[in-house]
Image 1 (tube, rainbow, N blue to C red):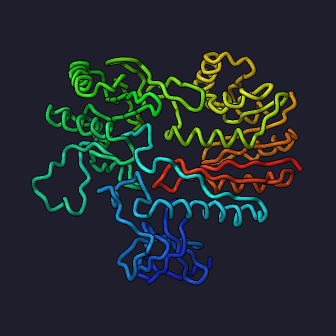
Image 2 (image 1 turned 45 degrees about the horizontal axis):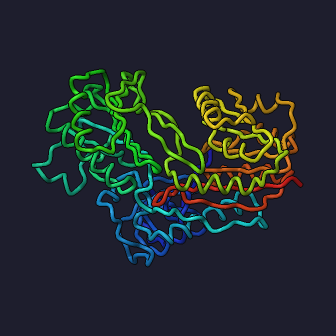
Length: 467
């Protein structure tokens, strides 16, 4: 077998000029036509970068030193930015983030779809660049990951951490007491629980040892009502530990209306339990998107940026341009949030969703608003689409990050729906699917929406018309 020839050597340092950003957050440089992705590099940076991984078509690198820093660079306001996995671009001014996200969508469409004539609008900015998340999940650990500055400090406690994962790791937890993506009230709760656990010697769970009590802390806050839910995930049940904590939380933070304990006895590192105990208040909080209010329990899915979710759904409704006699399919309908929007104007909406629990929630949501022109079908989306005999005028699809299965694309084409509205959280897989759909549909407009400032994530709404 002929040995592959690489233009770069692993661990070698190369001078590179960063020309753009990739979906995934890394800076892009080239040696001839060979692409190198550089972590935490921004367009305009000239760096000396060390190669840490190489493949036949690309390499990955980290910055060894700067020859010139980009004019787009700003000081990240979060002290944890260099090591935390929560944000990618706090070092990039927000308006520049928006410009680069729009360009990433354009590049994906051009390079993957090969489409030249569709309109790609500038991304819609978030009204809140910070403090926009209505849910944050923090991990406990019995070994604190130390930053380079902390390594030499003998006074730092190393046996407790409550925070977020170091990027690319499952067992390294960066201890934090303030995250700028959640509200100041939620940060006060995070810091209080961290301090309380240490002062009362409540043992965190060890990811490797599988010993200890505290596993996760999930804080949710309603954008609409400002109610807060605190979900403490533990390895076993112990009211003697958690009841006093719940009492203290209620005394200090009156805006907390729900405190629950999820118990996860399994080794799997997930913030959901086999059992849930209500420690204080209600078992859910209420939030609102458009005219609809939703009950949100500890483990239910809900868009994490409430205000921008409304922008996203309003855009989808606008693109659907529904008439009163339209029959609509909502693919990957989840708990029915988009279906409820569509049912306001359509003759009938059928939602397709594989998760049985989500379908049950969707029926409850429809019943709450007396919407009788909507139905939900549980099971495999492909099978149910192929077996449904009714005619369809408009299809709205909101697939997972991996995009749509080719058989779903084929079913859409065979349906002969006059309009398709594609809601995407991944411009790369969206571009792949649009290329397939373009055989029978014209791609009219793509509208990116910034749901997650300071991260590389991009939502898009695309309108397609049947040829």
